[in-house]
Length: 302
Length: 271
Image 1 (cartoon, chains in turn brown, cyan):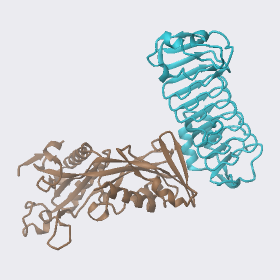
Image 2: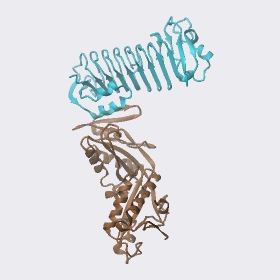
Image 3: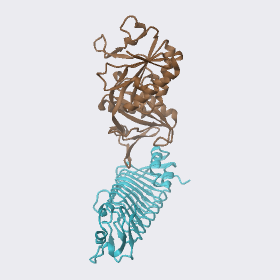
Image 4: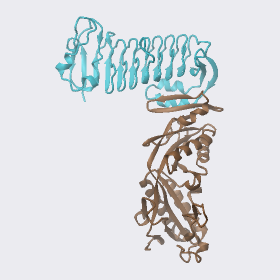
């Protein structure tokens, strides 16, 4: 594989392979920014990978009280799944158990998508007959009486079929500390890019996986080619002084947003430099035959 | 684009049916064709040319220079565009309107916005009885859109309303929101006796209360509801007074318990 070098950081001439996904967005508000964030954190908790969580979700941005429908502080949350049915199921279950239950919360559509997904239209039954439907122009809301007043929830939110999941960067460094510093810089840069989330804890995943396993019934297992402790034992992708690898997985509402996020991540890693951060950037793919979206790192250099 | 202007020559000698003078009916018509449109409601024939001086323009923007309480059915079933009536209008202004904007710069007669489905109506003066209400024999009244009356309104505003929003910045007469099926009626000032009479669902907001509330409405306490704050933001472009009212604490009365009791009357704390 050809290797490019940008300001001392090696960039593998490879590509990230990503998949088409279904996605939606929500705006969650509360009386304070803290409680809006709390509701969103609960909702997007345990939503790191579709492999085990059913969906991938994260906070996309923080909204000021001027940017939300009800004039309170809020956050915008993105939710990704492999099918419309699974996305609807996850949306309904997560909003019902985490946003509806959070003190003072309200929930609105965060995307004008191609098709509607049921939001308040599904949750209204919690009102046990006391729910109130309110329409204004094209907007439709449900008011559900709850113990601290009313839960206001928009009837539907939008679905997009153009979303992309699985954009990624593999960040390779000499030590776990310097690699984490580079990954943190990249995650911080990606957090500023609109319409994307990095669903893993802090935006970073340390247990990258490959498809399949030696064990029956295990769909994914450790990415041994990038495990530094197996460097001599397996067909490794690591070089002599590569001591740690961290990955950033990116889901976006559009392919352009994923590319923009990867570009921002690479720029942040390069800016930190090889001494304090990562020495090498790579990306994960399956040979290019599984996913329709390919992001070549050489096209995304700063 | 210049508007299509109908200037009133003299006070009409009979009630006129102005329902043909809406944008989608006049689009593409020549001056002569428009002048020939019959407007009479008696056996004595009156055409547009007899009563109006016509100044051609874009049929999407229609203006009536001078009004009369004999101008009936202005903006009937209009689907888009704009009609501005520079004066009073008669009965059923904006009846069955589905889109566009109707502005009345005077008073409107009874049954304004009757059976309206969409669009926006603004009445700078007062509106008569049965604002948004159904005609005899119809099951539902207003079904969508927004109506703003800067003055007061007569009896039974929002009668049998099913959807949409009516804002009355002045006072409302007796039985405001009677038999409401759903929708929202906001009265900035005081309402007459028995608002929400036999309402099934829907919301009525009364800034200064009413002269008499039926005992079939039950006090649920004063609240600052988020839904009202959200509504304030939505109605603010149409009425700042209504928005200010919705941001105040409001006392909620659930009713009418004589029927299903899923409706609500909110009363502003006048203190």
